[in-house]
Length: 506
Image 1 (cartoon, rainbow, N blue to C red):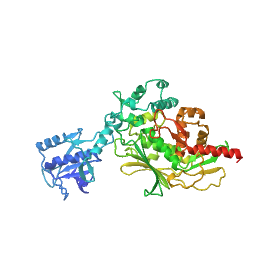
Image 2 (image 1 turned 90 degrees about the vertical axis):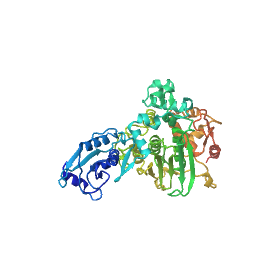
Image 3 (image 1 turned 30 degrees about the vertical axis):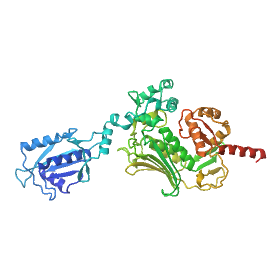
């Protein structure tokens, strides 16, 4: 490095990547800046330049000076290999400029400290790094040790985990070829241990998030849902807050979509059967909600996921960040998978709820394109990752084979309305075959002639619950081990009216 190089560096004053000190009398402050460079984008630390006038003066450099610099650099942790350059100043014979370059921080590296304190750069200012930023970087550096999902769950035991949910995930994984068939008969502790959801035999936070019925210690296990009037949050017609583990929140969110979004049906020429679609594809909404729950920052206990439905759009938000390798723009392009909660994501992948290889955004966009719906957009507001779906404008169709099904209205705002009509053919079938009194899901599924519990829940039970034609024996505990279902008065009235129509030949 030459004096001309120094002149070019200091010509534009101090910045995010340049710190100037008059002499090594400010060595300690200089090391604060060095630490900040290492934790930000890197930069140059130069001694021998007056910061205000930018006059290049240099200083006398002795053996003691070099020893002090070496000792100061030793205060940086982790240790760094820095080349210290000494450049002669022609205008001041015997004086030298002292220049050091520090490389910037890379995601996954341990954050640097100087004498135990981390620093970072905000423009040209050196600041102490906030605790949450430091914790996040430590977590990224050693996720297997520090991540929230890997910590032992306070107050949660194996007895608190929902065995039906666990067995259901295992069965789906076996059917999907992602779990060996031997897992069906193995103790659930063995499978959970293989999924790294147990620590010394105790459930982790990840296990609690996925399967626990005991959520007393987890205020973040909640989902806020609202249907707003218009395009802002000034007025709502439905406002709900549900709590539970992963599958409770997923089921509640999907039921809310079925309750408030338009459903259309079309008779296809090739099968003479009615195909039914939510105005925004069910698959796209489900994938977006899955990702929202899987990749959120669960350690932020004071924040919750949310679903907001407006007249013109749907917003699904979760407390979190985009991985450094992905932006709201590049998420639509092919990319690798960077799960925030690795063990939760792996368990959902093995049970076929989630795919690998970062394909979630692509599947969302593909589902939208197949239905002719505008692709969603992703954004980050500084605290939440938000995916926004534009709601299509509902128009009367010229195609007589297409019918529009109106969204369910909030009963508190509905006067005398039209008679109930099942929203889908699956709900119609469910109402027609349901026995008198309560029945469990397995019994009902057998009556419908179906074998896939996952598809039965998604296509029959959830839409029927959203329609208000099916009710739970334990409404406040959706995953109660003895949960059963029966028809509501609305469904019974529909059956009675249908019978009268048939008897009168209508």
